[in-house]
Length: 228
Image (cartoon, rainbow, N blue to C red):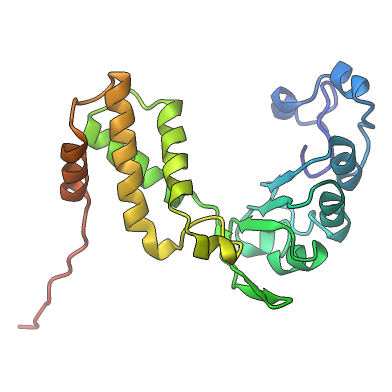
């Protein structure tokens, strides 16, 4: 979908670069989907459980859309990822209110936490800063000859494993950004191990990998300067 509705082959709103993402006409017809339906109707037809926004169109995830998600899914995932804040598809506080606190929300821009019916909701910023530094560091340490899809898979798994129960209790889907260094180290080590198992990198032991990650990570050190 784009901000104007379902993309169907031969009808991509005059934007041919979207054709590769378009649904085949036969599939749309076989599922009984109205290609001209609005987003809320499509959510009901498809029984969508995840809604990801990268449209840069503020407000397209409105109350009608969020309530449709709640109708078809007990705990929907709603990710308004466009940034800056002014381009976000929805305000997370509204998503929580419209979903009666049931939606899990991650955003592309930073938003302050809120209280809803006695529960604190902290909105994780779904940003590539959680994964890319670790993948890059791991590939560098491994001297990997190729970066594979599976390296990103193990990175995602390590990121998920870094989320604590205390985070989940506040509906946060990512660890706090204050823990980026430790998350990066875990991901880097996982990528080096994956490169080793695939035969695409150095044959280091697990202990050697952990030591190499610690040694290779950059630590900013700012010298004290004295005026002369």
